[in-house]
Length: 592
Image 1 (cartoon, rainbow, N blue to C red):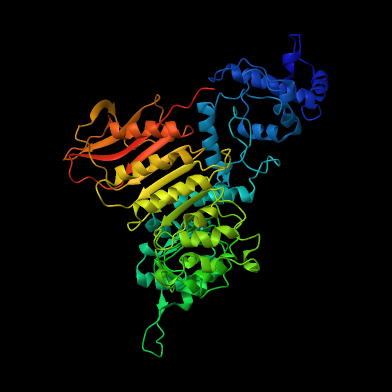
Image 2: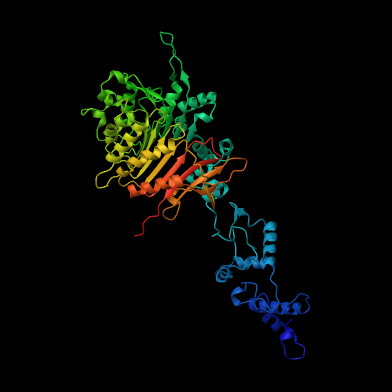
């Protein structure tokens, strides 16, 4: 309508109309066409019922070829797509940033979900949605074709998210599975391959044949003999019995030997560190070539012969990493002549087994890391002289007396440098032997200046008479002054005679577990012991004890370094209403 731009009210002539039509041709003039389109849009918006917007579109957001958007103009979806696909719109929109932490608008979120569902864009890849726009705008262009720089998760990350166990280290996963009951471990192995490997470690790392039926033990040994990878998982093995073979000898007697599967399984346990055997000679003597290096060995033999004792000494030369060695049940030595047929210097059976000066097996490297030993006097006399390193803790079983060949000086001479010592006297050991042995220990386990002295001493007697505790107290009183530098003393006896006077009960509640003397803080000097009234209701309280208190004061005067004294009664008293469980005394350390 070219007449709208004329100021004259007169109609055009024929020549003027032709010139005007050429001048205002929409096809020949793109700019005038865009302007006329804008006029139509302005006129159409006057009669439109939609609400007009008050924001003006910036020139940078205009679409080429479609003219500039006027006031109130609402751009349709295809125009938005063309605008977003243009390079000018992409460069300008990347500079607009929405403040973080505000979240999406409800309207934008709904429009994004509905549009993505209708067009099939914005599908999650690897469990996460690809980033396709700004957080404050609807996700109109969810398709990957509009954004070539869309981030796609790495396949390894996708696998890690699908398998949650990959986030846990193997060591942590194994530590968690060890805490589970063993009956639940087979089900746990079905979770994944990593869980299966960790479950194998939890199942085979510690084996105790006491908790397994005998037919199952035979099957287990067969599996460990055939599958080396399972046998290498075993770290601790406790076997009080094992599968045996029974070859008959010519004289009709039956000899028990370990089965071939058990010996083969034992050879496959290259990572074995802790071993407990019912008998040394039945197993280790038949399997001399073992690949493991033990750190703890416990042998439960109750009796041993002279030749077997030599085999033990020879086999121990191959265990250079051994830190703890124990013979807790060994009480009988077979194959030695009776003490009455021997001279006084030959009554000790270990004397014949002492290593000679030219013995290559007892070089400087014999048991270089051994720190704890639990053995009778015969084993101690045999092993300790050959060791170059001084042990930290020694538990010594004394089953002989002075009349059966025991020589305290011979035994204690090999124990120089021991800091913690536990001496257990058997039932047959008399009181004179105990006094002579403890007196020699006080004189030989410390130097004159007190250096390298024995720090902790525990004395335990197996006497069954009612006056065992008072007898032991008297022996300690006569020899305590020889222990220069002794700091801790513990006395254990089965029985303790109850005084006629009832103990004085203190109004101090006793905790659930008896605290350690090292953690007990008390004033100097004070002594407490535990009483347990018998009956349906058990109530423990601290009570004062005059007998132990008087002995403790005497001992601390004779041995000034003594600051921690414990009294332990292992058996209950049958003729009293109050059972004495334990007594301890701790002197306050002097202030510096």
